[in-house]
Length: 207
Image (cartoon, rainbow, N blue to C red):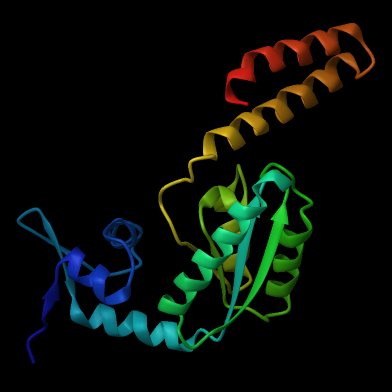
């Protein structure tokens, strides 16, 4: 039987993902596609292959993070959106929700540690996050490689950052700058206090 092909839009609609995600999958080699006159065409067999893979996934970890307690409502919305995403993409899987209220720069987050330990015990097959920065501010590919080594795939559900993303970047910048100033001058020095004051003045428009 002759192979049938789908456009990126048709492929995305069947799997319940965005067209941007499909193009990303093509470029990363996750799915086979052919460029025909400047447009991607994807074999229908790729849909069947991905759906079979989704059926094999039985245990998913949802990881959601915000940087402060003032964003608890955002955290709840993030979790609900991820639950819905998992229900569409891994309909046969059970999931566990793990959250952190901490900076994406913080390496010893309790929730992140829990997911890594769960992966080590082979209790999950997939980790789903809303955005790359939900998992970590820097070094996403390193963490992804770690999970892959443990036999766990990492999925980023959404492409657009939330509206408070800039505010979180500012908070991370302040944390980095004040941390370096403390190491260089010491927290009790007048130079440190001057640096902290200058940083506060520089970012006050983002409050």
